[in-house]
Image (cartoon, rainbow, N blue to C red; front, side, top):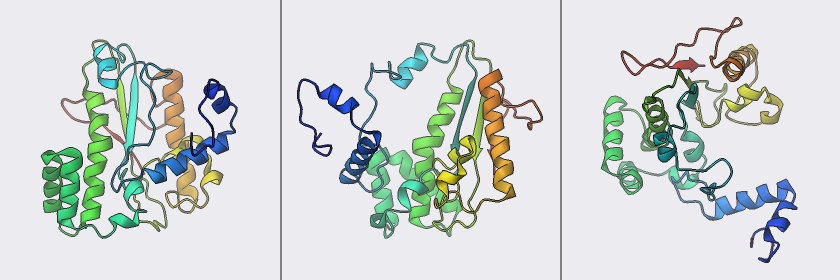
Length: 248
């Protein structure tokens, strides 16, 4: 309220609803910067339990059969965390011990184990690069797979994608970063012309847009992200093997 310049009163809700969206977004951005903590990706404000779209916590909703009888399509990008790390100057000088301590504070010893495992397989990776990989798993990929593997008595099909598109040129070393698929879902490339996550547009981006947006539109209309000349998208199966559609 202080950032918005709105005084608390009996008509607070009415006053907030009358504010221009641009002013609300600007205030939210300032709040996020004021409360920013290195390596922290949590937003400064959350939906309220019991409010529209958030009647229950996710785990409780799943236990009560939220996904029963429904097809499910979920996905994440390959390098989600680079969007949260690469532009924060405070993080660029982190060394190995600092990253391990940060992971222990945020996610416990299992996160440190993930760091060491990835480090052993990628000898040239920097501590910040390993933090990005481990964080992508902790905050995005692991939860996605847990959702896919959650038992459902009557769910018919689950489809999973991973966004692997890397912009050309990749000026910020983002790889396939957080929200990188959004321009390809809505075809709104003109809104991202200076965005480092998109790069230069060419025939490749046009083809990828048609493939990705077409698949998701097909899923919305039919429950299956294929058909009508679209490539085959296998349904997910935890056993005998994982089936994930990669978009690049």
